[in-house]
Length: 160
Image (cartoon, rainbow, N blue to C red; front, side):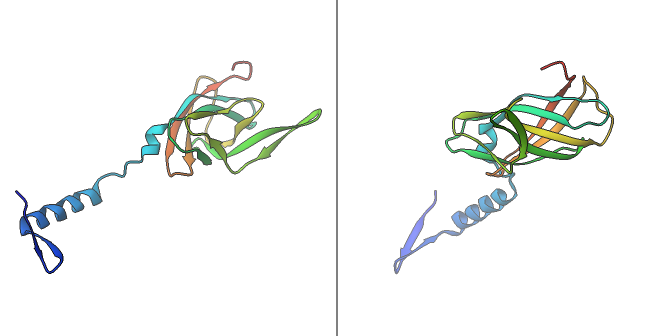
């Protein structure tokens, strides 16, 4: 049973309660940080379109946000590639061009499709031999601090 004594407008805890509170704070300081957004973000259908001769590969994935707030994809890295960039294909009449972008928003309770013809990941400078049938890992980092280490299936150019 905890007891609080009030004296001159100040609330004081008895020594047992004070010790218990201090112990709880100490354990909380060493507990792993849990981000609600981590559970809200998922990656689905992740794959890479492989190209021969060390040509840049393109990565595709669907990001799902079950959270109440939109979240931006702000950084992409891979231990399998020297460089990964987020690009967007932009149509300008009869032509299309790729533009590097610094973020892409995953809407609250929605999805962001990183797919052919739109947003895509450019994976360059493979650090080892990569071929269809392999799996490469891509780390997706978000504006809320969440990170998804996502396996991407490597497929030949003819397959989607």
